[in-house]
Length: 417
Image 1 (spheres, rainbow, N blue to C red):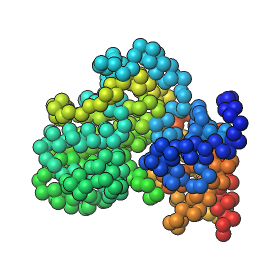
Image 2: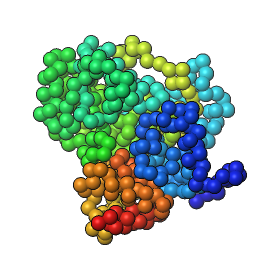
Image 3: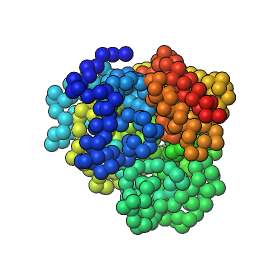
Image 4: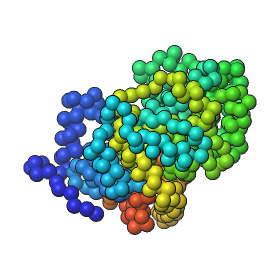
């Protein structure tokens, strides 16, 4: 716990979030956009937050929660990690957005190449959509081909070529996308055949983490097949590690299955909440990476890069994936025990570092929403249909606290009958 000063504005605390939503709707279409739209969460969830530290967050209404979303993934060593924030502060005193990058860019690039197993080089961007788009662009430049394979239901960003939502997107934007089913070797092989010799890349997620679906870790057979098909056709194997990167393995999320990609996209956890992304690649794609024009005014911002250097050093020193695995195992076992206690069947899937909890047969998310609202009231911030995230800041006591909140959630679901 920590002390945070509240606003002395005479407003009842419960009204602050509602007031901010009302103001936002006057100046922001819908009041919010994308994955943070309140429509994606149960009624009663806060939209606006006051502060955060470690694995605890506090909303503008003054309520504190154990955070199981970690800002949808970026917080990997905890909110306001002192080492990361000190590195960012020192760099900010020297400069951030300048006419060119700071010295820290080279240090970060060297550290990334030393950390990511397949990487011979790296380029930096600002968010995950940037990084996946850069990888696809480099693959097309290197191969001179057009077709890109993506798994049905996978999320690779919000650009027209990959967004799962059709508004404002033209058919032409996706003219060269082909689809396969994740972990289905026959489906993947058939999609490669559909490309008819015009295959630039196969894009794979670190694991199947589709919204509101049971998660699937990659099978070794699927991963090896993707690698072999790319080798046979000359296509690039692109690993979208934006969501999972550095939580499953510091060298890349497919290291445990023994398959290395040609190109990888990282973001979220790379700089512990500071805006940064990276496309990494092997030497086969180095020349193409020098030829494509991908850029942004803020892509060489030095503060985020300094934060990333500190974050990577902390993760390496503390063996972050192992620490998160320990916390995730404690959480998963506790959730199973509570489900059995209340006779409420659940499905837990995916890696334990990124918990996914679905209620069996709950197609309308009635149970999930009931659970989340009840747990929220007891200080646990869950998500009803998105995979969650753990960080190195989640100590055993924090997991126990969130399981205490989950007890109230299961009790509320059991009361539905």
